[in-house]
Length: 401
Image (tube, one colour):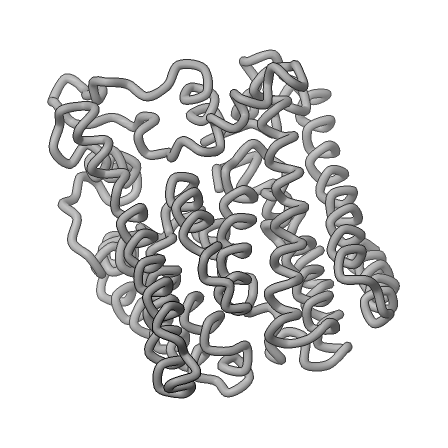
């Protein structure tokens, strides 16, 4: 019955998505509808868990819907907002670095701290408010990016798949995800529209919100080469200089946080050691080497078969990005998303956070792979809506995304 209900809702939503709307109303309507859906899922699980006395991540801290929406990594954002970063890296008795706030970037908690006196309430309330409003902005920016490269219809469907998808609930919990996506999609829109002066400030702020903006610097480099070859004299020198400078500034900002962490704590590799402290529960203590984490994870848990599995996944990813209908999203979106996934392969240990970390690739939802026909788009929408309650239970309640 649940699947039938989801299909009926998705079909009705599909009719709305095929209708014409203004450039701002469509993403806002989709954001509002998706927030009602995600809030219902989160609220239902919170009510059931509280009524049954089931413990959850924030249960010991005045259990409420807002603390429930501020579980897991949000506790570190609260620490940063209220106490800042530690000047000494915490270690265990053997001298190994323990998980700490340096793994998280400052823009989201500092913004929450700035907004708190204006709206009142604890970090949990303010964090959810900031994240939810940023989620609205992320939906609008995603819509405008896809519309710029694929048109109105694809933009509406891509926004729906993004907002109602398995990780759609993360657009309203006290994580930095929605704010990062807002900044990232806005910078990508500026690149697509060739408004180069906006890219550096947006990219720099994004660099101190979540890791991953190095992919934007790569997209700028690809854009520079492609436009230089295609436009020739039409690509003015002033524009070329702005693109180069923007790319360098974004890349510098993307690499700055480890340097800052080391300077403040006086410990070389403070940020890297902090990140590796989260690996211990999955693969034990490891030394970091680029492009090895996926193989390390798969080899630890599955042995040689895991290595083969990673190679198959990577080959499938290459095949996917080489498809003509994927390349149809345009060079800027294509190069950014490909570079971002390469970044994840290079530095990230794949575990339950992977679906969340793939959210910046959402502009690909505007490709014909997902929205080529109405039937295909509705099918993907149904799948996403059916998987979101599963993700809420498995990731938000039983684990951490």
